[in-house]
Length: 181
Image 1 (cartoon, rainbow, N blue to C red):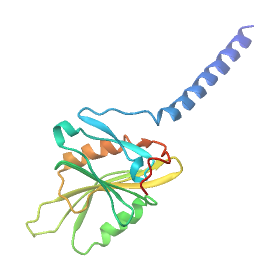
Image 2: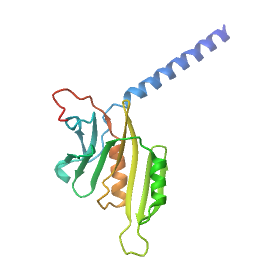
Image 3: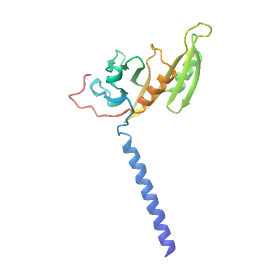
Image 4: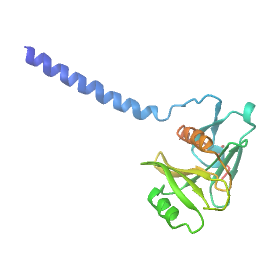
């Protein structure tokens, strides 16, 4: 009798644990709140997602631009600027490009499976060190490359804050009336 109860207990535990895993996959689409941020719906620009950006009250309205090459640029104030584009998210290719760069000397600060944070400078030039990030994001069945705006200068703390915002990206279905593309 004790063995039967023990086996039932194990199966119950496995069933509960399995349900917990399924629950986590549905939570990926939940809104993640960041202090001082507000949700920005990107569906009207043809991107089926939302992201938390610095709030308009303290930082100014978000400036969103769909570029000719299909990238969505989001700028909020002086400290936040990201670009989202369809892509492969090939971090190894970026690392190779950084190694082969003839102008900038690059150093990888942090590397994860889907994230690369790096800094660049031009040795002995007196030009301020530039901090950048590149993140692969999968939403639904699509892969996106998200990075800071390359033409701008951001401090390391600003890059960290942008990465926190990028980690709030979530699927938001596009309705036919929202699509501008």
